[in-house]
Image (cartoon, rainbow over the protein chains, first blue to last red):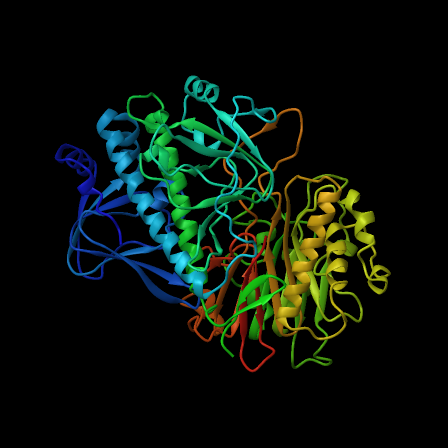
Length: 329
Length: 307
């Protein structure tokens, strides 16, 4: 279920957000965004409900969610600049506020504390959606397939150092820092600590709040993993270099009960979470980059859940340690 | 970088697969949607038509030219209706050292073999791997290798994992052999100290089964050097998409799989969707393999996650 974005904002913040949008009244069944098209605006549902529907293989349509009043929709395409992952359709008369991407960027990146709080609310909404998508993957994993390796969520703790394991330059093009100005990038780079992990290493982050850091991936690949009810590893879409690994520290939320596995020899970097806060020059820009990563993760994790929900259901079997799912004969 | 297409299901005219969609495989030669490189190093396909003479053997066609200009291909595609298809457009680096020509075209199919293979990706430092790979090949297969191309050697290694590569194999058997192939490649890379990312999206097909793996060795590990750049931007895992349904047809002006996914009896697999509207396509998960087999009493579909 989608969380209410407006409930996370005070009256002034709500007013600022809605003020940059255009109101639209929708009739029952009217579509305001179509799957696979370019998304140049996001929407806040003010009255009524929108159905989030998706066309799936076989040319069927599936309703993924219902977005009630107060929720934010259509933001994935705006943030990760990929085609819309679903269509938005009114369920009965409805009213939305359409916020064009440039107005959204201007508010969240350049409007000080208010913009930062709006952006943080968006990030928290995305994190909630990601957790819902992960739960869907986990539940479908139970009936579909599991991974090959034994699950040991204790793993190893990365060993952090101010020295990078190998000379790595951080060009402006690194996705996590793409919005930073050169001076900001230099400052952030000076505070990074790095850790190298061999391929196959499993690691986790502290769950308790405290002086936590935000981790990103500089090199290699890591897969986030949940633990299924049967004790197997539920593997989620891979994290690529330039992406954030664990965003919870930046949002001051508890860590998720999960672990990561290095699919390649990896180099992690971590940055104190204060760099994402309003009082720092980098706060809004890093938080926006984090939102982009969260949008990508929501998209890919939802797609994985849909893949597992295809006609793979059936009896499990093991072949050489690999669990497969088959259609029932 | 190459583009690949595989189909399994009810008979389909090859023209409807290769030319008709708005992001057709032939169009991906010069205007791919998910790639910035052109694929100008040739085209090939293998297609099984159950109503043809010697139906156990596929039509096979290769051309080192650019397929969009190939009138013979267009004519042939308009006549052949196939139930299993594997097609490939080849992309290589724009250098005079790139191996191009008829012998390097996918999909590979040795005489007397029943299964064909196409590869999207590249095994970095393959020349260092080759001597160790040669030891893994079955003698009868080793004699058939004609080039030093990584893709052909992957095919030979795959065939060597089958007890009888000339026999008819189920989708599960093909999948097991593909997994074994990837494991051997991983081990040899480790023995050679190769840690640079190498894409191995592999497609194998026979007359009633298709298996495709979406896999990158050491994803995210760019070439080592004195100064390794951490960017630019986010890397993308080698893409592989699929769609299922009961029928592949032109519906509301678009070529797509229709008829629902429950009880699906046809599948399309491709490096990128055949239509600009990607709504009815899903990505094969990274580090995984999918297998489709219509050889039994009902279609069997498997999804397998790999280490």
